Image (cartoon, rainbow, N blue to C red; front, side):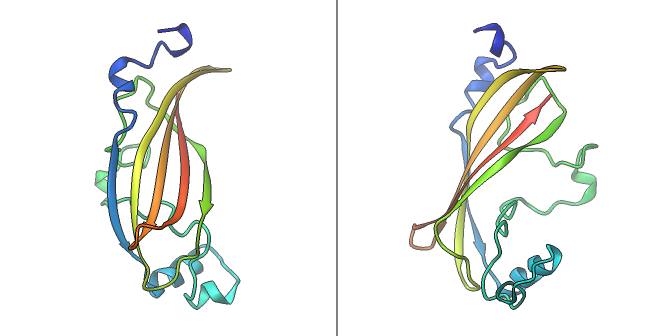
Length: 154
């Protein structure tokens, strides 16, 4: 172990490659319309619910939980996250690649995998980056979207 990854133990590394899902999500016109309104979409195809806007699936696989199930930071306990020594969480970014549009009536399956955990030194101390790969496929197993999400613990 080098000093640059001293916080990343073998137990933490053992989590890399773990997955959850696939979780089935039914795409409804009503959900598309609600999302379009909530996110201020202007294109009629979204407001009518004919097609899902970009980012529609972001977080769609996350369970709905009551407020008392959230931590003081507003986040729920993450099932695909090893116990990390740094507890403060920040968004690290996302990258999405779409393979086809989503329409009402589509059924998709979301599989989330913990792809990497690594440490970097920030200006105010160490940072732990957690990287997830999310793969969305349709009922025929064809790719709909791929997403890479990262979060930063400090």
